[in-house]
Length: 131
Image (cartoon, helix red, strand yellow):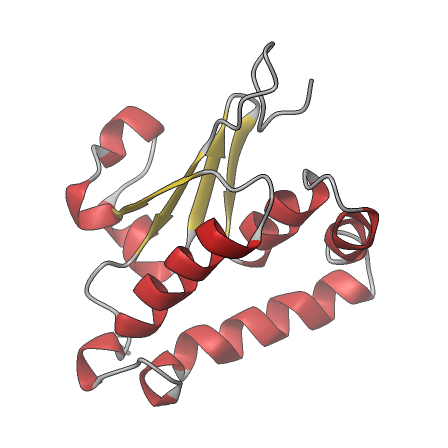
Protein backbone atom coordinates (compact mmCIF):
# COMPACT_ATOMS: atom_id res chain seq x y z
CA UNK A 1 0.00 0.00 0.00
CA UNK A 2 1.47 3.39 -1.02
CA UNK A 3 0.67 6.75 0.59
CA UNK A 4 -1.70 7.42 -2.32
CA UNK A 5 -3.76 4.23 -2.08
CA UNK A 6 -5.90 2.73 0.62
CA UNK A 7 -6.04 -0.93 1.68
CA UNK A 8 -8.33 -1.68 -1.27
CA UNK A 9 -5.96 -0.07 -3.78
CA UNK A 10 -8.17 2.98 -4.32
CA UNK A 11 -6.31 6.21 -5.01
CA UNK A 12 -6.33 8.65 -2.12
CA UNK A 13 -4.68 12.00 -1.53
CA UNK A 14 -5.53 15.53 -2.51
CA UNK A 15 -3.75 17.86 -4.91
CA UNK A 16 -4.42 21.48 -3.91
CA UNK A 17 -3.85 24.13 -6.57
CA UNK A 18 -4.67 27.77 -7.38
CA UNK A 19 -8.16 27.71 -8.87
CA UNK A 20 -7.87 31.33 -10.01
CA UNK A 21 -5.04 30.37 -12.37
CA UNK A 22 -6.07 28.97 -15.73
CA UNK A 23 -2.72 27.24 -16.21
CA UNK A 24 -2.93 25.59 -12.78
CA UNK A 25 -6.52 24.49 -13.35
CA UNK A 26 -5.65 23.06 -16.76
CA UNK A 27 -2.63 21.26 -15.29
CA UNK A 28 -4.63 19.78 -12.41
CA UNK A 29 -7.31 18.49 -14.79
CA UNK A 30 -4.62 17.05 -17.07
CA UNK A 31 -3.07 15.21 -14.10
CA UNK A 32 -6.45 13.66 -13.34
CA UNK A 33 -6.88 12.48 -16.93
CA UNK A 34 -3.30 11.43 -17.69
CA UNK A 35 -1.98 9.72 -14.56
CA UNK A 36 -3.18 6.23 -13.70
CA UNK A 37 -3.02 6.95 -9.95
CA UNK A 38 -4.22 10.54 -9.77
CA UNK A 39 -5.39 12.00 -6.48
CA UNK A 40 -8.47 14.14 -6.11
CA UNK A 41 -7.82 17.76 -7.08
CA UNK A 42 -9.23 20.84 -5.42
CA UNK A 43 -8.66 24.57 -5.80
CA UNK A 44 -7.31 26.00 -2.56
CA UNK A 45 -10.13 28.53 -2.67
CA UNK A 46 -12.62 25.67 -2.10
CA UNK A 47 -10.48 23.68 0.32
CA UNK A 48 -10.39 23.75 4.11
CA UNK A 49 -6.67 24.51 4.21
CA UNK A 50 -6.49 24.53 7.99
CA UNK A 51 -7.66 20.90 8.06
CA UNK A 52 -4.57 20.05 6.00
CA UNK A 53 -2.17 22.17 8.04
CA UNK A 54 -1.84 24.81 5.33
CA UNK A 55 -2.37 28.55 5.17
CA UNK A 56 -3.63 30.68 2.31
CA UNK A 57 -0.07 31.98 1.86
CA UNK A 58 1.17 28.38 1.55
CA UNK A 59 -1.46 27.58 -1.06
CA UNK A 60 -0.86 30.76 -3.05
CA UNK A 61 2.87 30.06 -3.18
CA UNK A 62 2.83 26.49 -4.57
CA UNK A 63 0.83 23.38 -5.39
CA UNK A 64 0.36 20.89 -2.51
CA UNK A 65 -0.10 17.15 -2.44
CA UNK A 66 -1.62 15.95 0.83
CA UNK A 67 -1.50 12.21 1.56
CA UNK A 68 -1.94 10.02 4.61
CA UNK A 69 1.85 10.15 5.10
CA UNK A 70 2.32 13.90 4.86
CA UNK A 71 2.17 16.94 2.65
CA UNK A 72 4.47 17.95 -0.15
CA UNK A 73 4.75 21.37 -1.76
CA UNK A 74 6.02 22.63 -5.11
CA UNK A 75 8.33 20.31 -7.02
CA UNK A 76 8.22 17.87 -4.10
CA UNK A 77 4.46 17.51 -4.67
CA UNK A 78 5.02 16.61 -8.31
CA UNK A 79 7.85 14.23 -7.37
CA UNK A 80 5.70 12.49 -4.73
CA UNK A 81 2.83 12.22 -7.19
CA UNK A 82 5.10 10.58 -9.76
CA UNK A 83 6.76 8.24 -7.24
CA UNK A 84 3.40 6.62 -6.54
CA UNK A 85 2.40 5.85 -10.10
CA UNK A 86 2.11 2.26 -11.34
CA UNK A 87 4.21 3.10 -14.41
CA UNK A 88 7.92 2.46 -13.71
CA UNK A 89 9.26 5.34 -15.80
CA UNK A 90 7.07 7.81 -13.89
CA UNK A 91 8.25 6.40 -10.55
CA UNK A 92 11.88 6.77 -11.65
CA UNK A 93 11.24 10.37 -12.71
CA UNK A 94 9.67 11.06 -9.31
CA UNK A 95 12.64 9.57 -7.45
CA UNK A 96 15.10 11.53 -9.59
CA UNK A 97 13.22 14.75 -8.80
CA UNK A 98 13.77 13.95 -5.12
CA UNK A 99 17.57 13.58 -5.06
CA UNK A 100 20.37 16.04 -5.81
CA UNK A 101 21.41 17.22 -8.31
CA UNK A 102 18.11 16.45 -10.08
CA UNK A 103 16.07 17.87 -7.21
CA UNK A 104 17.85 21.19 -7.68
CA UNK A 105 16.91 21.18 -11.36
CA UNK A 106 13.31 20.26 -10.50
CA UNK A 107 13.11 23.03 -7.89
CA UNK A 108 14.44 25.59 -10.37
CA UNK A 109 12.08 24.35 -13.10
CA UNK A 110 9.10 24.51 -10.74
CA UNK A 111 10.07 28.02 -9.61
CA UNK A 112 10.30 29.21 -13.22
CA UNK A 113 6.96 27.68 -14.18
CA UNK A 114 5.31 29.16 -11.07
CA UNK A 115 6.85 32.58 -11.70
CA UNK A 116 5.85 32.72 -15.37
CA UNK A 117 2.66 30.64 -15.33
CA UNK A 118 0.64 33.62 -16.56
CA UNK A 119 2.58 33.40 -19.85
CA UNK A 120 1.99 29.66 -20.33
CA UNK A 121 -0.93 28.07 -22.24
CA UNK A 122 -4.14 28.68 -20.31
CA UNK A 123 -2.49 31.39 -18.22
CA UNK A 124 -4.00 34.82 -17.75
CA UNK A 125 -2.87 37.99 -15.95
CA UNK A 126 -4.78 36.65 -12.90
CA UNK A 127 -2.22 33.81 -12.74
CA UNK A 128 0.63 36.21 -12.01
CA UNK A 129 2.14 35.70 -8.55
CA UNK A 130 2.47 38.64 -6.23
CA UNK A 131 6.08 39.84 -5.94
